Length: 103
Image 1: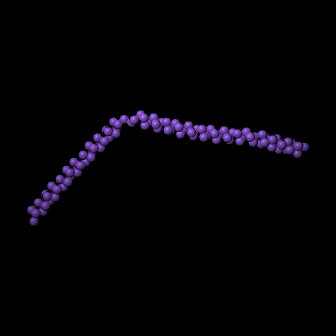
Image 2 (image 1 turned 90 degrees about the vertical axis):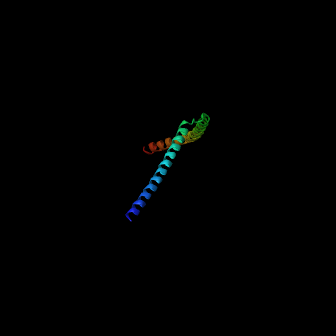
Image 3 (image 1 turned 135 degrees about the vertical axis):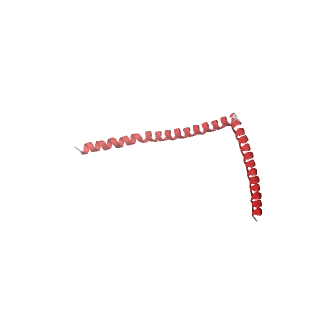
């Protein structure tokens, strides 16, 4: 009985060693693949054409936004200039009324 248990334990240990070796081998291959792929990624050159295209798109978007903001500012300035004389007139009348009413 004790001999059978010892034999069984021995078989289990050998099977565990095989499984462990298989796992180690698989992990080694995975690490090799990862290293190879990382070298490929790090060594790959980014095409300047793509970078220039992206730069143009960013500059174009910024230019469009600045034009839109400028147009909005110009419209607001025109509105203020259009209403300024009227508001000034109201203020002057209000001051005159206050001064004349205080006499």
